[in-house]
Image (cartoon, rainbow, N blue to C red; front, side, top):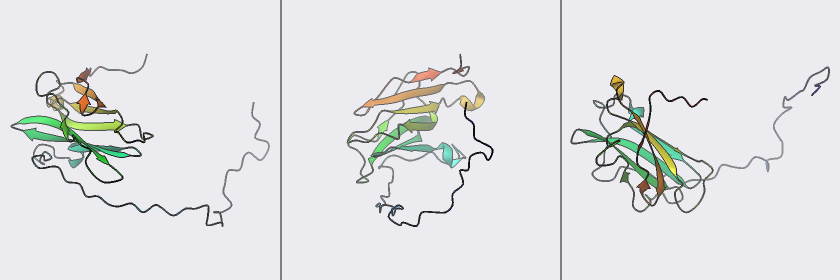
Length: 168
């Protein structure tokens, strides 16, 4: 085994490096304000009291991924968009509706999004979105999962059982 010796291991720092070439200045990045496109809007405080439940973001080396909840004609719907970091422009074909227009998983609230932060390239990476049935607060609905696969296409939403246990 490993023997740290009588004095143990000292991992303290004696100070910061005195060579300024080691510490690089932060890059200068442009700020790109983004507003939802015409016809899109977050749900209101009367629908989701916590603003953090209304949208979510994820980022990799090339793109910013945004997912949000809208209420259209009384139906909770999930949308997503992708923004290229180098230009601040919305990628062509986005935003898109994530929830299908009918069938299982066609309504959703409180979306979350995840992407591999190591991705870098000219096209968006596959990313995952999970959202709740509108009935979840009453403990009678599903958690839905879908994945962006290419262009502006998503897999069919899959229910995640409320009894899910990722262990053996």
